[in-house]
Length: 240
Image 1 (cartoon, rainbow, N blue to C red):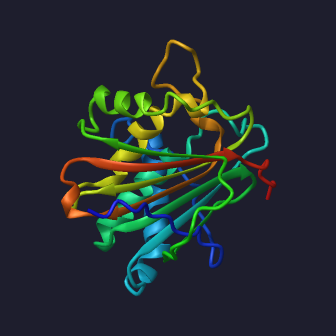
Image 2 (cartoon, rainbow, N blue to C red):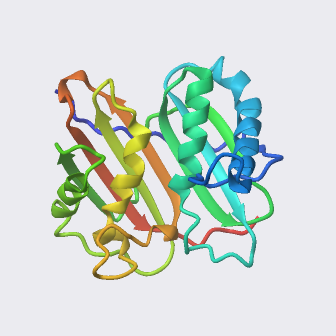
């Protein structure tokens, strides 16, 4: 079994302005204004990226840059995985393509940008912390988060301020790997810090200003999940 961890470079060219502002995942009822805004954003993303996804060779990558108003605290809430999850889910469904690499950035600014591109492998460099983990529990259970947390007992929280994070996954061929993002990040309180010491699954993930997620499929891993987590302090994002 090959458990080498995937990491792909963040696309740095071809970013397109999005006419509809990026939206967070919404769990409100259909027809709620948040759902309407999300659908408008996703429709815009399909229109922008659909033609490219028809042509790009595998593996493919996505990058979303989110601009937040200056009055919005940059490091509180507005979690990047909650922007990326509905976007990647919709684009994968409409195109029939699976993403190998997904990146999100947030900063204060007046516009949002998006690009899909060929995923280019890279070696990790400049990360302060790296952890190799393996889980056996179902990702929908608390036991999954506990397995991650228990393998991070030697981790120390990153200093206060912005953070960049990358998570590489090795999964079986039937796994919908975007479903792993939120429960994995929820279990990283030992690295990110927690909103309260007694709230184990409520990390300070709003301070992630750059999030990278990569995946590789290995049929031999079965239902297990192998992970490599890279984390480091980030420079304050430059407003646009």
